[in-house]
Picture 1: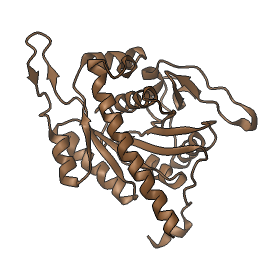
Picture 2: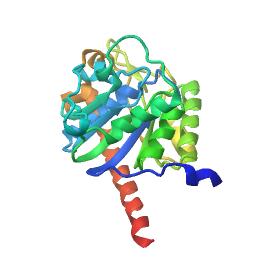
Picture 3: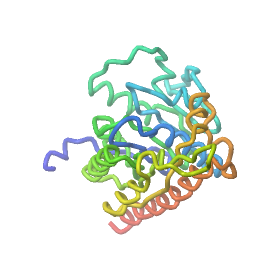
Amino acid sequence: MAHSSAMPSPVALPGISKIVAVGSGKGGVGKTTVAVNLAIALAKLGQRVGLIDADIYGPNVPLMMGSSQQPAVGPDSRIVPNDTHGVKTISIGYISPSDKPLVMRGPMLHQIIRQFLQQVEWGELDYLIVDLPPGTGDVVISLVQTVPLTGAVVVSTPSDVSLQDARKALEMFAQVNVEVLGIVENMSHFTCPHCHQEIDIFSRGGAERTAKQFNVPFLGSIELVPAIREGGDRGLPVALAGPKSPQAAEFYAVAEKLMERAQAAAEAATDVIEIS
């Protein structure tokens, strides 16, 4: 890493105490569903939360949050994020809400990510959740170069293919020195509504084994429940039902564990600064 001096060094965002990226090695594992429900759960647990939809090519956050309004632009051409379900949110889908996919090169992508971090009027936040695009690539590099991340959450289903890709995501975060705060197993198992038997569609438990193998925390598993998808499709994520709702409870359990891990990571980061 001799060339690192030329790399822009990350600058903390004033007023934002923790920045957590939510990633996955591949698409289709419900990463945005997890990011959105986690953000809402954190907000309902009394945290001040922001959510960046960093999936520039396929932004799903507007649909899932049920908001499509164009954000206002305040003085100094700073963008005012939409406030939906108690979460301050920004997405490229609010700014160019067409079905045509945006074709962009790396530098443009980098600019947008930087703007979402630095030119949005976030105010004071306990958590800024960044929903990453699937895979391992440019957006993560832009993120890491722009702001110091508290850590990352990796979402996987229990299937072997998904876990293989989750391992790639774990390795990518290790390469850019981002601590993985934990793995979430999504679409973990399915309970038959008729016979109430649990069916492991994707061979449940794989993400927990992967977490052990890589020595990272396991944050919990989310059942495969139609209500979770329906909530996202209607713009009313299931976490809005609160921690007592059986479908939402697992998201709250994951949010509690994440808060514990993020707090510990943030404290460890400040300890290092004090000693030097």
